[in-house]
Length: 147
Image (cartoon, rainbow, N blue to C red; front, top):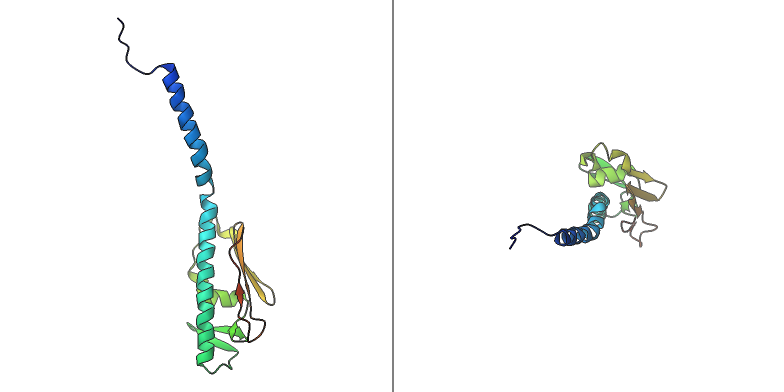
């Protein structure tokens, strides 16, 4: 009787097929890790901006509710109806974006641009907008991060 040790060809093929199926299921999950990281960075900036806007409005109210600007960490933040105006300078001062470090390979993917009343922050394929207050009764709108 012949005692052979090892795997048969069929067993080897079955293992390869199972590994292929696992790879086909797992790879798509990990393919967009960079995109999800960029989305996470923007969500962090968005959350910081929302908190900073409310704190700036609180400082405006505590000061009597008549100021057109406030000082935050030594920087002047311009206000519209008691809320920060939609400008890249205000965003940089409120959220302290000067200390945000983005890898050189991704630095071109990050931008903050503003029009008269809307600030758009973009990182890769993701972005959110900050629309300044239209009047004293309407707070600013910070949109969700969208692809």
